[in-house]
Length: 136
Image 1 (tube, helix red, strand yellow):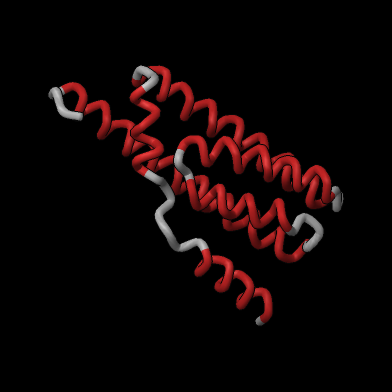
Image 2 (image 1 turned 120 degrees about the horizontal axis):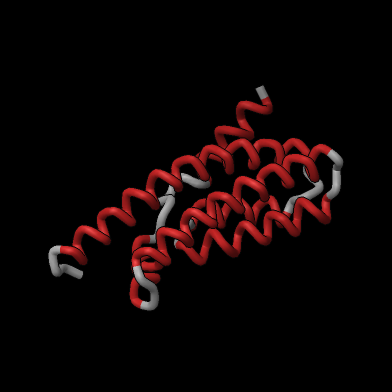
């Protein structure tokens, strides 16, 4: 029962938009579409590796590694405009020793990364289409 409450409570706290479109779109002011596409691909390859390391660090009760890995993922996520993932990572970073809470956050983080990948790919396609037809 307690675990269900924690999970529901955590999910409610991160119900905002997964992507800040202004931040994401501003990347196109300084980079070409192909670079942004590569950046997104690199982000998801690296975030997958980071998640694996986070799971291992949590399993080993290595609070310092959990904190550092969450910090790394928080920065790269926020730079792409992935606010919700950044917020979850910040919570992990602030509470790396709370095993039950970290486990809940990691589950939520994995789900949000899947949603983020779909959102970023959809957004990238939309921006490229608008540019191709002469829009902003």
